[in-house]
Image 1 (cartoon, protein in one colour):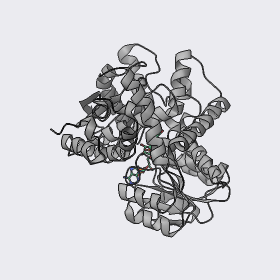
Image 2: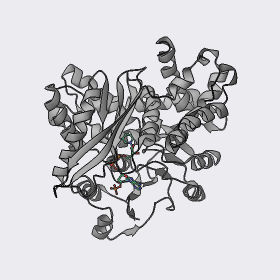
Image 3: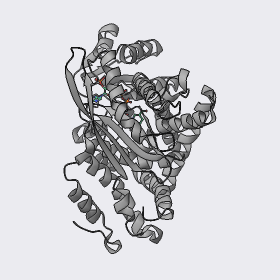
Image 4: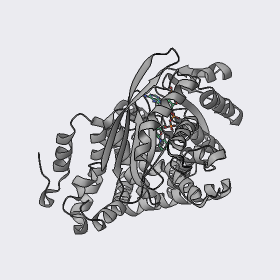
Length: 450
Ligand code: NDP
């Protein structure tokens, strides 16, 4: 096994070390590469961070739990899925990060998400470590009873490893308020404790106001800061959004609220192109369609007589592109379309939605590009506020949570400027990575070689 010594902290050495350890985890290696490209040059310029073993510890999870999830479907067949919880870094606080239920989930995907979460959580300024979990369970087409049985079985194992002071999961792809409710119910049943062990809970039993909206709203608050920095405004801009889940729909709502025109949304079947723009009434239909009924986005095109296409929406001309579906959804050719159409801002609602090559292309062409760990941090930030409200047994008003969210996104933007301002513009990726790293590294150094 290659060893890294402080004298040769080079990006190549660190990536070689990481790839040799987990060659079969491409998404995790991509996330490591993305962070190390910013962090290693910074470490080489700052002696304080040339601390033995720091980088090796940073890219090694404190704990990775894998478990069997047996459950019974409605036909009485026995099914077995695989569950994961990666507790990556607790230097800043209890592990915090969502649960993803999606057939593409494997250990490498959960490790990439947990790794990203460390820096994102650090940027929020809240005392949150980084973790993530999930299962290769596919919720699509499952009945509510099947979802409940699966969630209960998942929690039958996970409950041993989580608690309000140890690890506080939330939702992610395939896990919304309904699933969090089933998971919370089973945790309470197993432990006989009513604690804030999950966030994203329903309002009736300890959830925070504005948690469902937080990632999407936070994304738009961040975009507003980016535009303000170049003396521009969201008003009147044309926006294309991918996805039509939690993040995408609330990003759409806030974009409309701020005066933008949203012309596209998508799901895994394709995208709708509504030339006239999605208005409040159409958005209400979409919320019912995608959140309540769990239908397909194509139904929107049938209802409002607009275009539906297979594939991704990145060929549509727009000013602002907001990828809010999944990882690596903007590839090189998609980035080329965005550049050709003179998009001015790409901000990530999803985690790692741009491939390495796409990101480099966007950056080189001078497009204002924001990485998810900065621009989608609003969700975990309000989860952090939910933990505080639960600990105090209080419930804050929408206005109060929204004010906090606006301020947190503004502060994250400032941190990106502090470490990412260059003569040619702002390198938000460097800014977010370095600002996120500094706080975690300081805490890790102070806590010793653990
Ligand atoms: P949801 O499950 O609510 O929605 C996901 C959306 O993306 C759905 O419209 C889904 O389509 C679509 N999608 C999923 N996989 C693919 C794919 N392979 N190709 C095309 N479309 C796809 O998830 P969220 O909105 O919660 O999460 C979206 C992204 O945002 C993820 O990357 C997540 O990690 C990230 N994120 C989420 C946060 C949150 O608070 N929820 C916080 C920060 C980041 P379909 O309906 O067909 O399944």
